[in-house]
Length: 238
Image 1 (cartoon, rainbow, N blue to C red):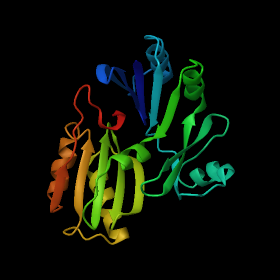
Image 2: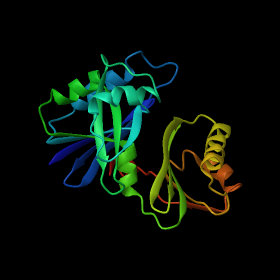
Image 3: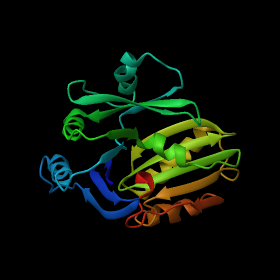
Image 4: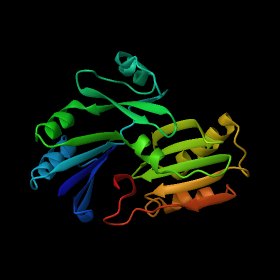
C-alpha cells in the first residue's frame, strides 16, 4: 500500500511517501521572497502526480483555527469563531473539524479550498486532520504543570497542560529567538505557571531551532527534548 502524507505549514509543504509502513521518500518545500506566486500550489500538483496512491493523509498546521469543548455542535458558527483569531474567507477556505477524545476538545480549522479540491479529485481515501489534534494525541503527560512545544520551520505550536487539563493552545509564527522567548514567558505569566515548577517538552524541528532551545534553557529549570525530526521520520506525520 502506498500512502502519501502531506503536512501544510505557514510557508511550506512537507510530504512523505510510505510503503508497507516504511518511509521511502520525504521532501520539504519552503517559500521565500524569491518563490513564485503559486509555489505551494504548483508543488502540490507535482507531488500528487508522482504515482498512484492508495491513501492520502493530510495534516494542516496553518494557523486558522479555534478550540472548543467536546460536544459543541453549532458547526455553522465555525468560521465566525475562527475569525476571532485570524481572518477567514468562506470563498477560499474549507471549514474542517478534528475531535480529540482523550482531552474531550475539538478543533475547528480552515484549509484552502483550492488544495482541498485538488486532493479530493484524486478519488482515493483521504484523511484530514489538524496538527494541534495530532500533536495532542502524541503527548504523554505526567506532571501538574507542563508546556509542550512543537517546532516547525519558522513556526511553533504550544500546549499548556495543568493537572491533565488543557489550559491553552496556540500556533504562531516564530522568526527570532526574541519572539520565541517572549511568547513563552508572556504565556507563563498570563496562565500563572511558575518558571521553576513548569516542565517543558520540545518536539519537532529542534535541531533547526537549536538556538531557540539553547536560549530557552537559560531561563527554565526543566526542559526535555522529546523528539527531533530526522529524515524519513517526521514527528507530526507519523
